[in-house]
Length: 123
Length: 507
Image 1 (tube, each protein chain N blue to C red):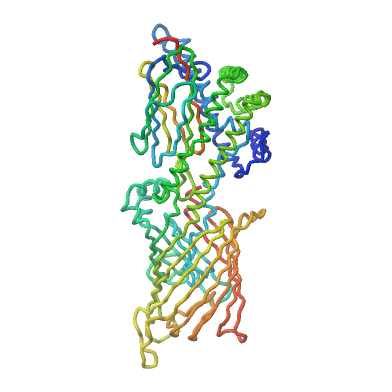
Image 2 (tube, each protein chain N blue to C red):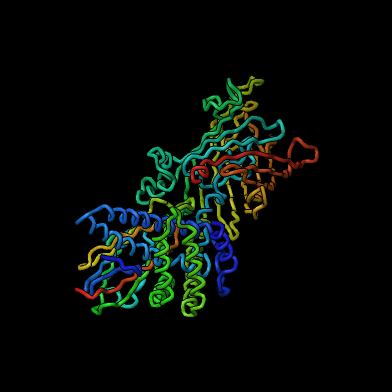
């Protein structure tokens, strides 16, 4: 999956995009927003206690921009510190456009990251 | 970086066009760390881009094509990284209130670790003993008295079997917590702790810590009957899930991202910032990225639709952080109930010819709970037993030597320049002596109480941190009765030094 010069993931019209957010260690505290600019998530499920998977259908019109946002949070330990070896990994995969570079998010919380998309004119 | 500091301070104190929402205090260091991570990510991508450009210059054929693709890919990633961090953009445009930052300060503020000798031990400045033993190893040396009635330096070594086991596996405290989380056996083991108290003035080499039997004056074991103060404790899972489930802030942030996507000024800024990163010849991009974020702030301050959404996102992020920190406050202020056993080894003094007095067993139930303002209440109920009943004047003594009730209230003080944040402590103790002490005298603030009956003690203590993990307690005590003074009352001062190795590890 390519990223254009405006920082958007370029996906193919009509393809299926799968987003998987996985936490390295306990506990999963990420929250994924709905989608703006495209139909909302087709499916969403915690596939493990530390991994959430969502699937979306890309609009069929070329040049459509859409996006979602994820909030990443981390629990502190008893001493109030965060484990620097803990992380979230976001994998975005299109069944046509392929995989985007994995995104790794580390403490400190709270972080909000935007995932913008644009549909290319091909399928 | 001066510009960043100034900006963070200004944003923290004033906000940028921010309405007067009730907000948690700003936490500039966390925002700064997030900014550093942002800069580092861009710098890494820039290094990749430079490498790819270099590769394209020298490569041919397929390699040149691959290098060209890598350049396109990296440029795209730089652009995405510049726009992806909505928390930073909001911080720049609104104010840096992502979280209150209570978390990283908990260990330094934690009042419930008893690193000195248990209350009542000779040399101790503590009237009441507190719960929650140090997780890894805590040791303390307290110089207890300014008067000769309490002599010697008491060194207490305290540990947690599970923590030590895990530490031996060369894991740090954070990993200890993660190891315990899914493992019920280890978590159960973690509820136990132990300590040994040594008087280094005893033995053949005085004032040298030998940790041998001669210097061992007692040992103790502690069991947390109820302790859920760790935010990762499963007891709080549902509360955390409720916090996680709140979606207003993330949905509003997504709306903001969508608005930015359709804004031409933002697109122009993104292109300008990406080009500037690419064209930059310096290794560090701190200043450049600061300048561009400032430019973005100036540009968007004239776009009401975006700034309105920024304020909404900022307020909702504050609200999320507030709810999250309220939960952490609740966790760290929850009650702890601890059962403690202390054994005191009695020895025959050099000038005594009598038989060795019985060792002493002390059972103590400790309750601690925090209140608003991080003040903390500690209450103890304890009894001291003779390990056997010796004969005194031909008659056997009773088993129960004494019973005590103690209460302590700790109040964190505001920071005092050059002294740091101290703690003010009010404490009270009531002691009922059923039998005359045999061997070690009953100590009330270092004074001996020998006659049967009841005695009450009140204490005010100021504790100041000297440096990380090292504190100086200064105590003034009042006793209702002591056989040593004619007016049956006494005011007394103690000064000591404590060291908590846990805090040194977490730094």
